[in-house]
Length: 204
Image 1: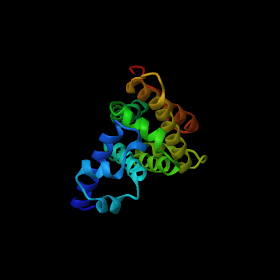
Image 2 (image 1 turned 180 degrees about the vertical axis):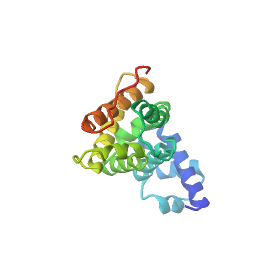
Image 3 (image 1 turned 120 degrees about the vertical axis):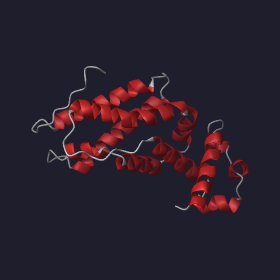
Image 4 (image 1 turned 90 degrees about the vertical axis):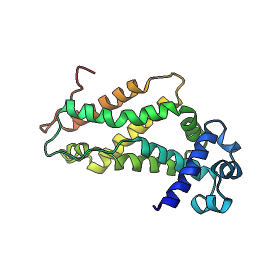
């Protein structure tokens, strides 16, 4: 993506975030977006067909940027304690990012989310899956690696949605611990016949 396109998308996304953080999506118009972003109407339509598509793309892009890049996979399998710490370092930045922008993400879920949004979100999360998890998933014949990663990702996404839309203000740190413990518990069951046995660190 060249710099001009990147900057245009940034301006649109910034405008959408500001507007949707304060207004219902049905009340946000293309005109409001282009006025705030200081772009032309044709420029907006060069990138998005309508406001809903732009809102969904903005949410995915923001979450993608909030997730830190994964370090390369090592030559040896991580211990459960190492995997727990590594997973926490991946999960916590995006949960804290979402918690700080709760009004925006709540409106996206309630007013703009559709099947394609969830599919795009899941694809983004899977693209950042820890290589160690992929290797651990290969230790059993069934379910297939892709199925296991999809099940884990869908489950974590559902936990995050319930947390985001729930009435109780659960700290992101608590949700991050629950997510990581759940992943390790699933991997422990899947690895019962192999050398890797998951156990959450007692210190957390």
